[in-house]
Image (cartoon, rainbow, N blue to C red; front, side):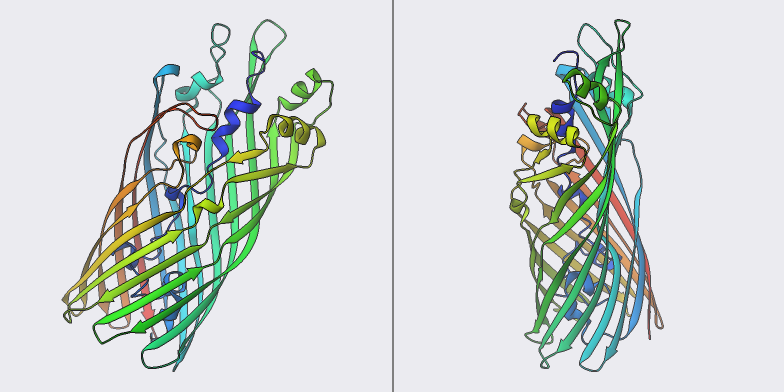
Length: 427
């Protein structure tokens, strides 16, 4: 097995598709600036995401925004001599929300990105993972990257049942995209040396779900919101490529192609959130949210390969299963908005975002950290036009991970910086 260093060890890198660092749960620049504590307020177009009941009573309008996410990660594993910095990429995504009010009823349509991030490392920094001790120095040209994105199309409807109580619902059509490149195998080259092979996969898929929200106005100063978002199973289909598979299969008396199509079910978990918004003065708004994600529902992901030999080899080794063992987590969020002038507002916020991935399944291509997050932003109104800016910095706690069956041991650290800019118009 020394001569074939591939299938079991490095496949562990692909297990973490849903780390909290991938959830873009501060949709909209105003909500982002207020720490994402927006379920009880939800008074702009992003209510389609946060709480569709908030559409009722709003003026008709459109909001267009974009967010840019920049991670700063490092992975250090002294036993292998690895000290690798994550490539500082920009992960940008747009959001569009439109709504139309008809008295007590409101209709909306959202096009936004609820999840999307990735990681990339230089091959020379991870060369130790392509080496065979005492025999082969490894290949510095192997690519290591992941990129995941989800686009949601969400038609929505809200109705004001009473002067104090509103209900809303949004349908969620998810289009998922996932690309990954990593080390695939080392095999003898026939001259006493070894050749490293690249593993590459790309897949897309569709899934369907719904968001249900409600709001209750206790008084002119206190508003309560509650949102339930159903789980969405995205049926991913794509192609995996590993040039070493024909040789690996041949050494076992089988035949395999370099490529295989595959299917994989990926589920975004249930999300339940409650929030309260208070306006103690005409200028000040305070918000508080608790947001729970049922990550525990994701214990493992199973990949079904169309190529029978791929399915047999990876099935026997167990590498067709991505072990997650995640834990459900609750985020605590606080937000504030202060109107300096009727046309100009300042915003700030904070939230705590615990990591769903335990040490036993942590890896570098889909990092998961526990974050303490500070946010800020501002907004300016000019007639029916609005301009909003929001930013946040996620301070990640360092994780010192011991070796386990399904992880990458060592010190993992990551911080994330994000900012958003948006424009709006009320009809």
